[in-house]
Amino acid sequence: MSFQPSDTPEPLLQVKALSLEYATRERRVRATHNVSFNVFPADRFVLLGPSGCGKSSLLKAVGGFLPPLSGEILLDKRAITHPGPDRMMVFQEFDQLPPWKTVLDNVQFPLRVTGTLSAREARDQALHYLEKVGLADFADAWPHTLSGGMKARVAIARALAMKPKVLLMDEPFAALDALTRRKMQEELLELWDEVRFTLLFVTHSIEEALLIGSRILLLSPHPGRVRAELNSHQFERREEGGEAFQAAARRIHDLLFPPTTAPYSASARLLQGQDAPLPLLSE
Ligand SMILES: Nc1ncnc2c1ncn2[C@@H]1O[C@H](COP(=O)(O)OP(=O)(O)OP(=O)(O)O)[C@@H](O)[C@H]1O
Ligand SMILES: [Mg+2]
Image (cartoon, rainbow, N blue to C red; front, side):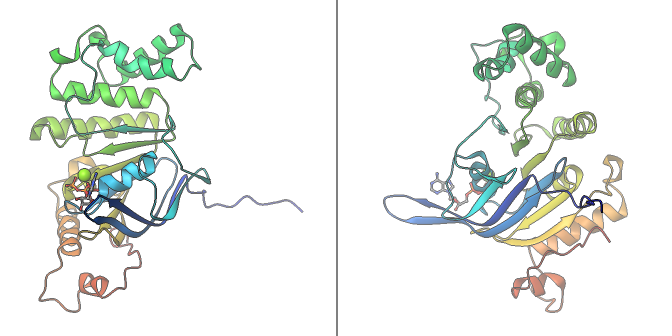
């Protein structure tokens, strides 16, 4: 009798009933409440919700920078207890690159710190990823000579060069102008097509979530709870102006900001506590 492997892949990242809290001297602030989700290998998993719902806090917790108040986070079935090179983070700030290091040094520095690569190997790997983001010709440039989009590309190359199990991105394009942001979104998807990394991406833009995400977790306002989990992998970059895309965006908008006059709508049901994940966009 042969053993049949299961068709369902194991989740790479499991967030289980996670509540997060900040304790200051004056008070305690609950950031998320009982949030659960699974990220599978090569998912582009988006956390979407209004300002203050705890998206960055969730990313910090997955990064190992914020310990759970309750619940747990497992990466490859092991509890996350501290930061590690298997979870690289890209932020929205323009200036996340030390200005005294060239572009190449910025990318190869973390590779050298791990101590597993020789100087030559680290340099080759850094150059390989700079090439992937179209910046091989800027290896010797200083960060202050780069545009915002180029700095974001360097930060992405630096993170991917570490070959993390999951790439964490916290509104990485929010500080860019609209045209550059759109270009970066497209480039990120092209890079994903090529490298197939696992992405956990935070945004408060519905359109960005639909463009970037293969799965979208909707979070309610502060403190963040799961409102719905959606598939959105049928959307292509070119479909943004299309009817289906706009309908999906409206539907997400209604889930995030429920219309008060529609008591029987899906969003009203969700508000009444039936917040089981709905496969709204995948059907
Ligand atoms: N260092 C901190 N100390 C105390 N409270 C904090 C801290 N960081 C965040 N909070 C609080 O935790 C809650 C969630 O914040 P968080 O930054 O995770 O939200 P967010 O969804 O990322 O919002 P935004 O879209 O504005 O970035 C908020 O109420 C915030 O005030
Ligand atoms: Mg945030």
